[in-house]
Image 1 (tube, rainbow, N blue to C red):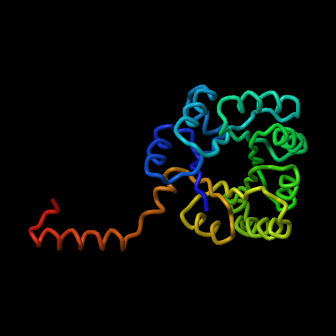
Image 2 (cartoon, rainbow, N blue to C red):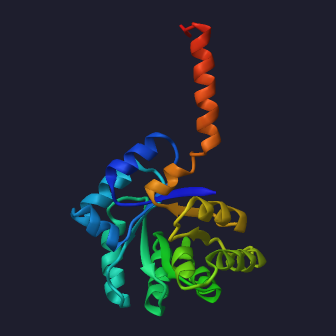
Image 3 (spheres, rainbow, N blue to C red):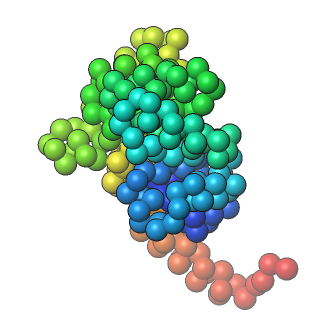
Length: 218
């Protein structure tokens, strides 16, 4: 499974990229608002840090305007994936962008039929929002499983399942078990993946015993 980090915080991205823990980045209008910087500037800086796909989302909802904004974003760097909404206009734009050689992330997916349409439109990624489904009382991971089953039935599909709206370490585990190709994870959750109380306990024991040896590795 590939890990993308879901943030527009360049310092967080730089830290995680230096650790070799991320394969790409996703952003959205809410994250750009939080960054409080010009969008094109932020995306360009992220693309300089990360070699993998960097999702940059259009603000438009109608085809012509989606195309205009998306083409501007795609020119920022070769690894920009233009993020479009899962609507008819968004899917139409997806097909056009793909035909032009641009990666596309189709976002706000909440059903398997929607994901099937995104794959037929040639999307590079489709982003089912598992956390928001959970909030609505629906099992978000069941959606990942359904999409995986459908995509596996049709080997010609190249669209990757990008599990989004990840809220916890268990979400990451369950998405991997369900067969998601990618999980896009907030920085705090991604860092939490390394943590376990028994790891900390074992490390404390080893450090104490090492101190008792009176040795140094030189």
